[in-house]
Length: 276
Image 1 (cartoon, rainbow, N blue to C red):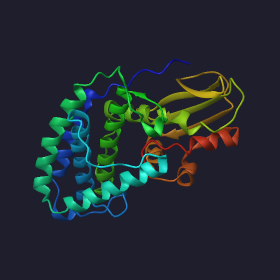
Image 2 (image 1 turned 135 degrees about the vertical axis):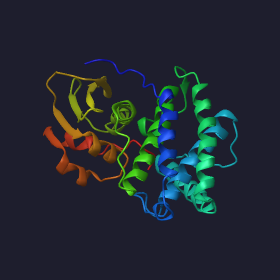
Image 3 (image 1 turned 60 degrees about the horizontal axis):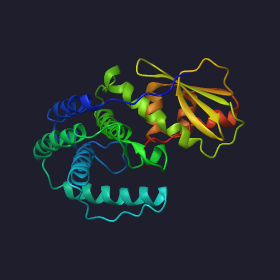
């Protein structure tokens, strides 16, 4: 069992965006209109949402600007407010042509990636809400930003029946970031100290992690050969879809292997690594 290490994704943003633009610039008009797993959103809508993520990050982070008050009094209120803002943005962006959208994604990508690269990744920043309500290291917030762009590109590729970005370099950091939600997922799950819950993600981008109950709280470590009270094994494709609510726990269960304490094992399937 080893301490977790920071996730380094700064160098991956340009490669992810280049792949997205190459894909989008190859699409037919019908392709742009294809529905995605995001209810009510087409491929064009989802691409516009990515543009909004870019511009919002630059405006808030680089420029310190915000003209929208968001109700963050609870997790549910925060999610509802963000969903409302996202819907308004996507509706407005339907006026853009696909060509203009691609041009703007190239423009926004250059600026948001330069902003991320300017940050002190070792500093403490604001919360990454799905990982917990407290301050989080900046590197985790930047990793979250990468996972959002990677996942949205996957959703676009799924809608178009195109191969995904599953190279280990691009995919493994996504899985590594998503599992950081496990301690928060287990925050209200009681167990005696020294209880272990093992999570194995199979595939070339996967790995092994262990939740350990210590001092009345859950902590996450990399790897673990110690006997576990529960063990959950998921393949990497099922894992990322589950953690982003692309599939439900019920849909993931037939693809998973759950061993040991059923309550602890089942709780792993409740992990959500997005604001949704």
